[in-house]
Length: 70
Image (cartoon, rainbow, N blue to C red):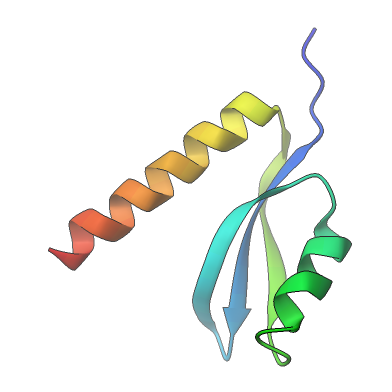
């Protein structure tokens, strides 16, 4: 059985997503992002998952971002 230890998240400022990613510690990651965006907040996406599933989600997000920018 593979451990589910990874969170998927979006970081928003004034309702706009400025960053997304994966982490094992949402509170720590939010504090890190707030150094750059002090008024932002983290939003968990879905349930805690495996590292591999989280990486796949992150790759999909990156692909969507670049394909919609074309």
